[in-house]
Image (cartoon, rainbow, N blue to C red):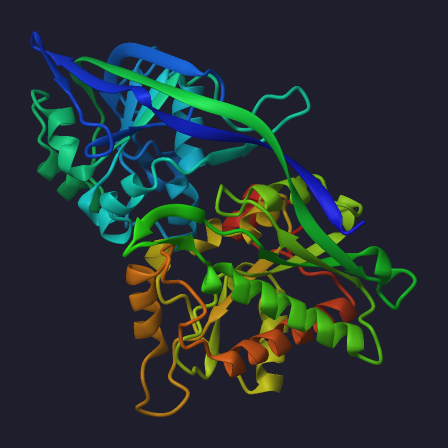
Length: 469
């Protein structure tokens, strides 16, 4: 079969019963549903109501090697942790990406005995993801992988309740604490946040409808041509899902996902077509995987990486395509994450053969290396690269691909206007497909499998025994 079943839990937030109350100095202050807060999805109980004292723990980071401990001097046991998103700007991009990930914050507060968590937006964070856009999608389902016993995977049952609060409502969270929201926002930018207990209590309540569902990854295999090396596999990936039907924008409720990620899947399929047609197949075997539920937290990728359809030890590399924004002709590509492993040497060679330039990530603050499917493979110790569209104009003085990408991220990312009426550069897409195919051939025929670079942050954390000499 071409299908790999992916067991999931689907959760739907209910407006009825949603509440967020601040009890302080004899006064109760209630936040407004959608306008000021959204209750978190609860995969472990159909309804919840939690009242507890609260403690602010900055960005919930414990990184002694970076001289950062947002829990120093406070006790979060039995309390609701109040957390800002992101990570300090002084962190290098790799560590900022790792520590900014939401699952790291959930794990950090749960391990320290917190009973709930409140994520409070900051102006900097909401510049990239406006509260109005997030709250408009409040009724869209969330998902988690489903374990054999029917429970959700990585749902942190120790945390009895959660919520997200807008940056505009933050002043109510910190009122009477001796700290004001604006000063804390500035301290976030400066990297000087300090933890402190908040007066009074918070009450978080909500209801969630949870149901089991199954989805599918779609997997194809091209056997390698070498009797020994064919037992090793290069995994090409691109996610097949998008947002679906949601809140109308100018009367349009269909969130199409042309760039994100129909184009990525098309490029992967074209690369597969070229590799299948080649007179000599790569020595290593190739997998082409259209992954489900990326938009719900890289779930299809996580399931495949932890439950592969081939022996896990044989997975040597992942080449991922996700939302290549190809709106203006470019002369380069952006290989995100390639600097972490010996895949860089391969990519350099492949790009040179095709006359392509290579550029660094134009938006490092977006920490996309941990936000797309390749990160599920990275967490399993598998070197990976995420190929994105270029940023350098194809002709001198021509229009800027980077400016077009920035405009897309502001206006059409996860919006109905991400449709096929955009000026998609199909020549650039074909070139990306050729690059994908060439990388697969070079990795497939190499004497050694790709390795993490010595001292690399992700390699040391997830695969310390597999670094290159």
